[in-house]
Image (cartoon, rainbow, N blue to C red):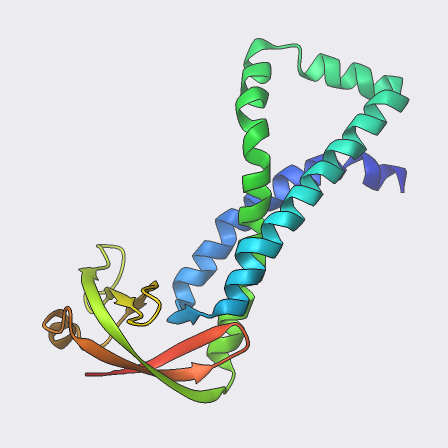
Length: 196
């Protein structure tokens, strides 16, 4: 147990960095066209930031308690932070730790939700949106890739996703009403087809 406690800070710093690097790469290979719903927004934009702040405070309490109780740990911290460059990097990186925790938890939970919704059969769903903008994806994607931006006419929310079919006809439908057809899941909707 003591060994796990000693390596907690290392794991808390390295694991989010690894997750933030690997999960977006995995998401790019699958790239499901996903539109979030209200439950998804509540979980990821209200509940998850509260959890991240609680985790950040808890990690600070653990480090502070160990610093107060263990003289070897106190000397190790003082020796590690004695360099000016290390002090400056800690001053600038420390406020970003909650954001790093949030980003890692967001990628850790949102990607499996989107992939699960993409690979499972959901209830039939369709809704009318306004196609507000069509952009090309860039050189790292296929030639048929476009990024589509839709506005919900009732709530004025903007949704976007990458789409790989009918590039030439989609480019001509900017500012038109489009029916998005797909499947409903617990946290959102997977787009299977666009009907103009």
